Image (cartoon, rainbow, N blue to C red; front, side):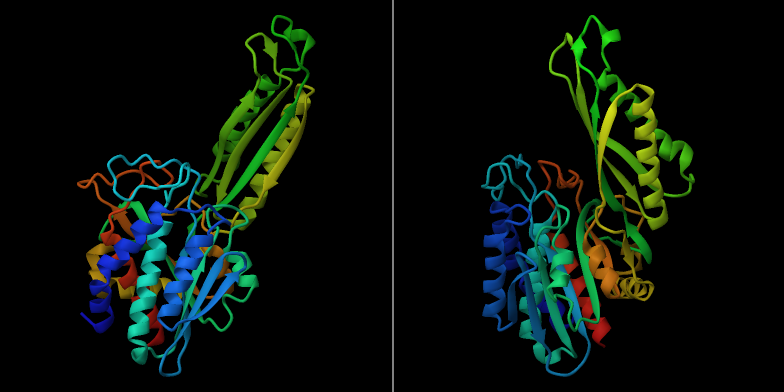
Length: 390
């Protein structure tokens, strides 16, 4: 065990305490004021150069090593979700009604804080510089990554690395891959305008619920019949709102859903196909419509060389049996913006533990992590940076 690993191990209990404090005091996207202050105060106490309000509530810390070398950025996200914490008998459950860290960003923040503290204690051994990116608003488009980059978060940076603690993968295991890793998550909202009327006289109306129902069915043909079967793609309608009474034909209905792709050309093609299907279906039944199609984050695409570094460093730290090529993940991540500007790698660190009952998926009201995953993530992230500097 080298000096950095030993110090991370020694700081584990404090890292857990930070995570639990943040879990109790979550803040929504674009409202991470106390969290940002918490982060900035700790970084400053370790003589790390700090910039606040970067692109919003973002924090950028710069730790200069004792000798010249590359500058490596490590990123953590800080925001929580509008979900009521339902973990019963949990000493660190959220104290904020309707808000909780249901995705692990509290643990990401605590992990990067621990790395920053340990690195500051061993700055004489750094052959280059470390940049700590504490990012606001990952959970909601337009997100914080792009605005932080626009405000100089990556200036002077040679490479960037990030992790996501991931409960679908067991603690002690690590996943990534070269090329596309996480999907581009787009959102659509379709407003159907029909003609309302009496439930017993449907022939005098244009039933928006019926038209919208046909749309739900027709949109499924995009993936099943219009996209190459070997090309990953999802079109899902997540919500359907229409009508207010049993005996009234609904004049308006609203569908809201998502499209997930990995290929930029297919992404645009699906958007156009969806719009054509909406137009044709509504025209068939003489309904009118409006579409709001919002492009989300780009696909997360790992640099090939840096993905190779993940397998090398991961194997050295944890053994070959613990390091795996990741499947494609249909969730989205605005870490993609960093990778569009600098070479780097995004990695998944297993955080689930069936024996401990840590089985709930991300964005679930009972979400939690095996906290040992934070120490694993800290070793992996810092190990990637040190290997790049070597």
